[in-house]
Each structure stands twice: as C-alpha cells, then as structure tokens.
Length: 157
Image (cartoon, rainbow, N blue to C red; front, side, top):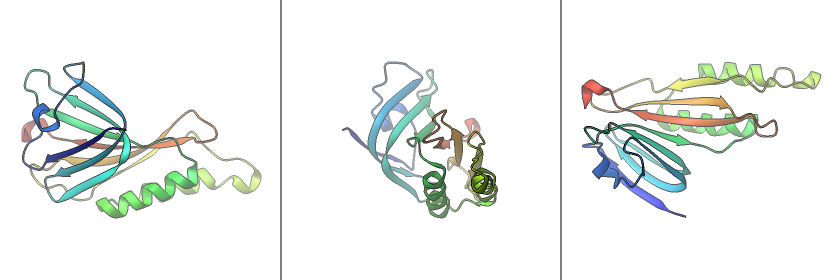
C-alpha cells in the first residue's frame, strides 16, 4: 500500500505531487493513504483511489478526484453526510436523493440508479473548488460511490 502527503496550499504542480504517472496529463493511483493540504485550511486524509489531471504543457494540476469504493445506499449516505459536515457542504440534494433512493423500500423496491451532488458553500479566491458527486456504480449490491473532486480554475493558476 502506497501513501502520499501533498501540501498544495501554495501551488498545485506536478512537482508538488512527485508526478510519476505514465501519461503526461492523467495519473491514477490505486487505493492509497493520502494526506492532502489545500489552500483555505482544507485538509483531507483517507484511503481511496486518486486520479489527477494536469496540463501537459504547464505541468499545473487541474483536478484531483478522490474516488471512494462502491457502497450500499445507507453506507454512502453516511459517508456523504460526514464529508458534507467536514467540508461545510449543504446537504439539501443529498437528503432529497436519499429519500428518493429509500422511498420504495417498504414496497420492496429501491431506486438505485439515481445520482446527486454537493458543492462547498464557500470558495476563497485561489483556493480550489470542491464538489462531491454520488454516482451509480452498476453494482446492485453496492450501487453508489462518491467522487470528491478538487479542481482549480484555469484563471486562478
């Protein structure tokens, strides 16, 4: 199991993450322990798959996706609630999604291929934007996963 510790609070370049992806623009790291510090006081830790996208000309990291494993509806709801609390994301869409997903359980049916997302309510200039998408996994036992996206505006370099 590999691990990474990145401080991206001042810059977000390939050298900041010791880029070792074979592609010049995309690097996927299988499940790894991570410790990532971002501008604005955001500090993320965990153990998930990471996918980085970079500008091959400038070496600037454009986005990092933290991809959680497939989970049950209830498990992903709990993980998303905790993530929303940690990152100060509103949960209106999450609550609506959960009600839609679980509304048919009494009748023996659960709507499993619905999706939703949450975004951080505040965004400081220069700091990356954060959003979490709850996506359909095509696995009926564990039908959902979270993709936490961290991305920088091209104009904020």
